[in-house]
Amino acid sequence: MRWWKILGLAGLIGGVAVGVTLGARQVQRSRREYVDGDIHELRDRLHARFAECAPVDDSGAAAVAGGAESVSA
Image (cartoon, rainbow, N blue to C red; front, side, top):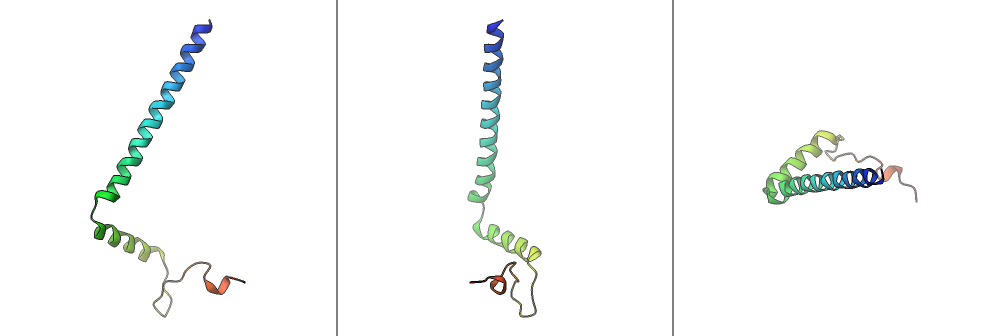
């Protein structure tokens, strides 16, 4: 009966190792997407995302949450 426990533990460890390997590959793939891409295209996409989420006040500057007005010394 003991060898069933050892076999089950080995299978569990193998499953975890496969999961970690597949996760690492996914991270490398997503990182390579940014590294190998055109830097200007990436900058433009980031500017577009920022423009969508940052509210603009009357002076044309983006309002930052927790700005200098709310900071106490």
